[in-house]
Length: 272
Image 1 (tube, rainbow, N blue to C red):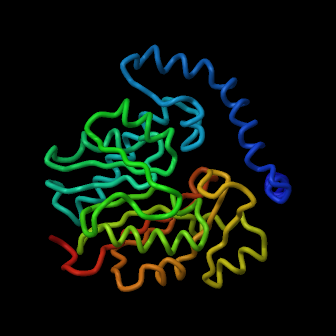
Image 2: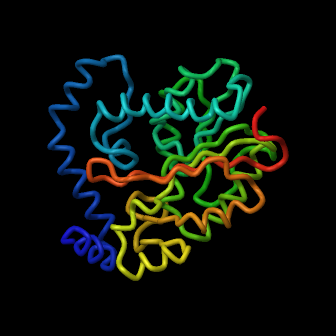
């Protein structure tokens, strides 16, 4: 409760982002030994600057590298339920500093093409210089993406809509379906019921009534900008496209897990 009150106060005072930056410096000092240990054990691995890692994950180098590899394999296991994983165009939308997409080619046929897109130019520059086998493209906070209509087979966004306004939810859902081929797969993780404890009583009521809840007073797209997606809102915004899977996140070791949504663009049969 104290943490929630402090966070709400900082947000109202427009200080949530500076407070998050201060937290980074504290974590940077605390993890100095672990960071040195990582590079002793994995001297050949190129990792992005510490603040890039903090902004998009947490400042734990071993987790950033090893857990992200596990996440890539986890995604491929889901994709393979709906697609034959060869000769596909796969996009990591909101790729950040390449946490997941750098590992994906290890688990997918090399006939596939891999892309990463992000609105943060510094991430795209770092990825382009340090991650081979993937094409990285910069977009803006608003659409469009630099892809032709119906040109991608799989798009995944891991905790990306969780930092966008309602207006951008609508814009980006339309854009992602524009660039997907008919039968293409959209894989998303979102803030569902497991995250309701982070909301005020009024926001919880709005969430239960099916309204998107947004906690802003900070830069949109930043980790401190938070959006919470009730299932009725997502079902409405997918329009005529088919929801193949909705897995509701639970609480594990006291931490809420994000919902998984897998949506197929209308136009062809489910499995092919």
